[in-house]
Image (cartoon, rainbow over the protein chains, first blue to last red):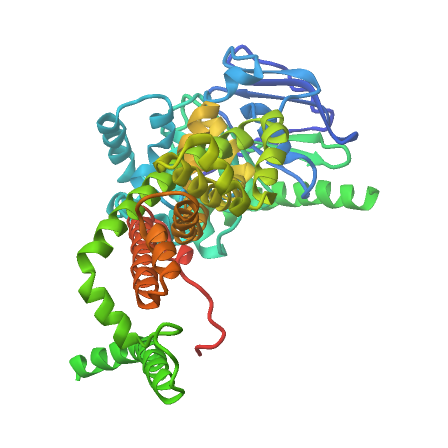
Length: 272
Length: 267
């Protein structure tokens, strides 16, 4: 297997908006109780692009996703997701999987999965059909009538992911989707995500503090620094064939990027 | 072996409460006899049992009246508490406006209110229903508000990102989250509601177990008073059991943790 790696680092993060950008964040800032959380953050994600945000905890990664999804209102700057500019109109049109699985304990797995469709008024029969179509792929077809408390952590995450992607929005945000899982489950889910998630027509943003996960899954990695949260590097990851996580993570290229990002992160720590 | 095991389990589960009840009844019977207490002062359980058997039709006729008042009052109480709690959760203005009134309504001794109610609305069922509602809506409101407030902000945000309207968040997230708390308040209200009915009847009525106790007490028919109390307890327990059964059914899909309790005494 031959792999070509193109690695470019632009430290000024001048994210030029391309024609094909599904998600364009420009110059947003956010304060919480007069403490600046994010300052001058600009991101542009193209159709079919998978971008990872890495950074130390407290650098505003999750806040950024809350702003993009429409849960929070930015203090300054603008966000455009496929033409949707207003905060309220983005709500319900951006798929967002939060850090915790947030499954409703009183609903079956199927009932949890179809929540997004149900809230949009899609009939139960049609919703169930769409859930069943994806359930096979998500490896939860056998547990659709189970209750969430009967599932393992890895399964719960897959249910939460299915719930998030089912409404089929063009922008998909993932906040530490595997953060709460043990290392082995985590790795197998990363592999599964690579093979299964069809993101060809979507713009995906993954927040993670796991550098390996970012390199494995993303086409581009944005490194963030805290106080206030900002983007300090934009690194392209381009393996020719991203199919096998084991192969990739053993390669020399992988380790080069890894060293680079870890250096950027640790440098930030010492500056503080 | 297996049947023996389950028998033993049933025995250990039922023996203590049954033994306790029988023990108390026997002690009562024996003490009344040994200490030679006059039956008009304190009748022994056997005399009360005979009284229940003798005036069974009479008791049932009045129990029906009290039961009807209780069920109507209890139902109105649930509806009222549901409306008040929803308002309190929905808007801060509503909360600030009605919460003080709700608290004030509970600081008024309801017993002093009952005679006034007779003057205002008469001696028909309305006055009893009002007393029952005053007695029971408060625990339901308190538990419902606590339950509706127990929802995580994260969960609410998740609903919002899926495009939920405020009403959908209320109906599909907050109400289901509040149910376990709601039933806790409902159990308190169920038991208290019967007391409300009796107090209402006490001050002005021509039927019901409360009225019966008042008349019988005035005539020193102590056994009859006790008979009415027994029927009243059974009424309250039946209402309580109905609430528990509804709770079990409505929470059947909830994780068992909701029903599991920690007992430090059982190892």
